[in-house]
Image (cartoon, rainbow, N blue to C red; front, side, top):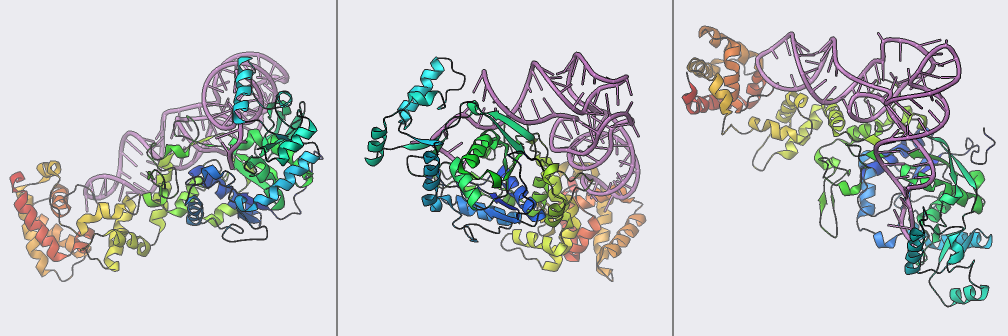
Length: 521
RNA sequence: GGUCCGUUCGUCUAGGGGUUAGGACACCAGAUUUUCAUUCUGGUAACAGGGGUUCGAUUCCCCUACGGACUACCA
């Protein structure tokens, strides 16, 4: 093991990771992936997966968002060991409910000289930034230099600070970031990352409403909850050095978790990261489940409702930025857990490719037992249309090679239940013939004398009729298909005939011969 | 602008000092088929550019370009 400050031996500790979303709206797909990687890692290491709700910003609270997070994780099969609903040894797991715990640590930092009170108003902060911008300062920020010009416990006389605090003046507590210091942190994905402290501003730790900011709360909670590995999005990388500083000043550096910053999920054109605001604009959902904004009423679609199967979705998601290093593409959750390792997570941003998601869905759909797929069809049947489970199974078994989503079964297979009301005119014009129509009528009549009504028997009969009429199968099959289904494409026609039954077949042939007579040549 | 991170087929990626640079999706072609789809076979297609180091660099180093993230009393 490295003797470096940032590295330490976590081998003896039980792996504990957390997914820590903010309930500010629906969880987006990048967040789901982060949760998944946390889960895979935890389970691979035989550790624990916790969910912590980071709701320290009360102004951004969105009703229903927390439930949405639970529902999403559950749908994906991500099981939590500790959470606001599962409870656990470090409850509560909502930061708003942990509010009383944070001030103690902020005060500890103040006493140690690593943090200070600041009384600046929003207007004063704006002024400061404007002033620095006008002076062509590259990064206007509240830092080691500018803090000397602001209203805080470092610049104000001691008695005034005391007076302000006692009189209830609004204040924040800021971290006193050193002026010149190289901060190093080891990222499991990127290696050593070096940042100079001058690039970090004096981050607010405690807000004026008494709530901690993410930065403080996250470190305090991760420490208290004995988190061993922080696996989160790359957008956190710039503030990671700040977190290292916090661990150090709080005296927790020897148990500081290891970091892994995940590459971001990018829009398909590579132009920026996939965000909640993309909604359905990109032509595919960015959320796992449907969501209706409680305020605006705006609806966003989710993968579940769009017809994506949970296991295929998870498989797809796992491969966005990670790969097993083998040729295997299809993985169950257990296989993902077995194969997963942080070392095999890529470094670069990953463009989102919905085509691949569709392909995964097709693979998983076809692998499902017919009895299960039949349920999708049955559930989609409109009022008034009956179907036995046995018949539904037969239909899905011949249809599943040609559908992507469960809802396609009804869309593509409606003709099993409803006779065509219109025919593909183009194909009819090209393939329909008087000779064929005559043969179909003969075939229809002879259906009554068949001993059995199954695909093989029917096919033999059709072949016989065609032979008698001097027709080849290729000349008339398309016409017969149009007659029976109205459309030009579909599964084996004989299988369709077997499923729709003798009477229906006869009826449809009669109607079609009548309706398509104009095309008889 | 500043700081940080990144860059292998269109996309997701494997690989790694000497390889015909491999796979998957997508795409194209052929085979099969009663159609479409499936399936099978084959194909197009990549190491961002420039300097080093080296006998040799796509691989290691530097620079440039490009892309991304961050730059709040939001997470």
